[in-house]
Image 1 (cartoon, rainbow, N blue to C red):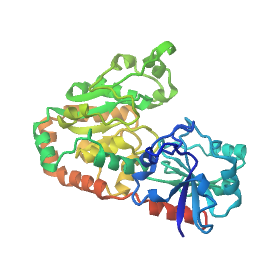
Image 2: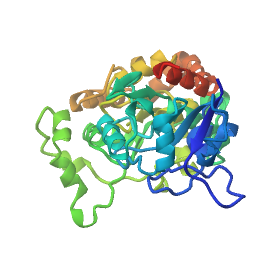
Image 3: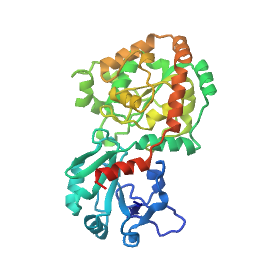
Image 4: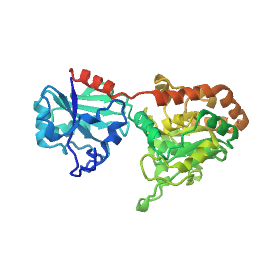
Length: 394
């Protein structure tokens, strides 16, 4: 069965190429290859504009592409009424939404949008980064998990000229000469990163590493640290009550040139990466299993890492065949302030030479395994489409 893809957005300029995706909810053009082309076996040559729906063979399976990003936007109203009619009436036409930039998915918003725009929910498939909703049907809408960030990060490292790639021998030389124990980048601040910053600072671990902690501008909204201090989420990390010196440890720290883009590949950070032994990763979401470019960057840079958050993140990596490094760090998880403080004290009290020699003696084969697995793995679009067809009983 041949699968075709229909885009409701295109360009009137012949030199634009595939700039035909509704990327921000307002119908503006962006590169469709950025969003889909990094998946292995994604058939770019099978993308058509909506005028092709009646011209393509009737027996072909057709998926109408709709890019979404809840909660920032969730709008199926950008799909034309004629295409919606085809989705509802033609058994070979489905709506394929991709909502993978965040791990949080909002099924109620898709249910609401289907009702609002008169779309049969049984003809809707949503591809998402959320792991818990995989292969579920909610209000007749089909949800399937995709490894979006692993796939796009791999492509970024293969293509971008701002990405520094290091060989195994180069990483060994960097390990031998590194002057800092760790690096910990904390941008786009969230409560969990604030908790982690407090732990690093209050235990006096922070001077032994490279730390960024970049407070956003609050404008007329007040002081960001005060807002965090009042957050019920941050209090949960501290068992309900913040320490009296909490705000004293939240000073702004910037390592490299700040990038306002959601994904940063500025080459100004690599001197800090290469002068540090291990990497503490504060992922985008602390409670859910959401592995983004932050984790895969460390793997691509051949660095041991520890994810601050739910231990299910490490478990999910192991399920995918990667090694994790709990034994090197001396803790199994860092999900609360007390666990963060314990982890920081353990690293603070270890001699840097001891860490250096352990990595070189015990962990290099596992680091190299992770590197090779990352660059040789596939996020196969054909496999995803097989799951989709099974889910919709085709």
